[in-house]
Image (cartoon, rainbow, N blue to C red; front, side):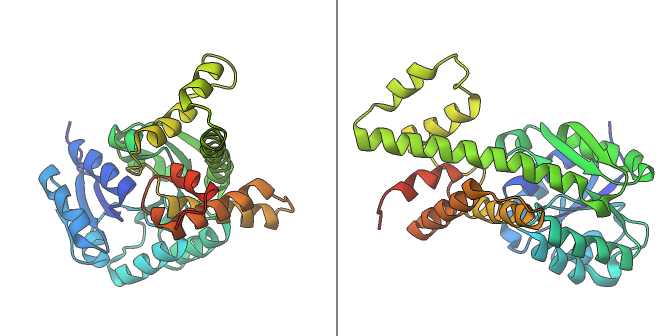
Length: 292
């Protein structure tokens, strides 16, 4: 059923493009912007209106949804939207921005009279394309009815964790979850690297843990990507490094030392240096070797 809610999606990378496509297919009025316009243009086939500037995208929108690389990129983009932002517009901020940057985004929203909703998404490329993300959200109850068709189009469920987006309850939960996701990714990558070094067939490793408490879907997905040599990104290595560093910073601010996350950020950095930054984060595997 068509919905007359208008949504401006700012950022049409791996996640943003999939979300915009599902919003348009759900019948919402979708306008999209991306720094590299070519990445947004295919969405026109799904009914989205591709715009040249953030200001053009947000003009008259009921909801602005940001899915950009980081907090500074989200802030720069909203500043570029400028006077086209209308007081009372709901801003669903889905960029994984970290706690410090989230505060800057919330202050911008307050200064411009926007209704700020902290709304990071849990999931990667496949669930985004299937409209099966889990939305982690914190914001005022008054915004929830307007956001319902938006979140229903992109996610399988919405977990509301607070009434005030400025407090970052959803962002804090996302960082905790991502700390686990990145840890599992490195564990799979290092186990596969060690198997290669010791002459153990990957399948022997997987068969030995099959069906037990050490087995899990994420292990299977990341090891299969490495076995197949298909590192088409569901979550890019360079983005994973950014998230790992946000997690370490958040822990430090809270008095929590996160040695594994700090080491993991360095693995992602090395893999990116080796040329794997735009590949799936399973490329952490290559950081185990002195690859040129």
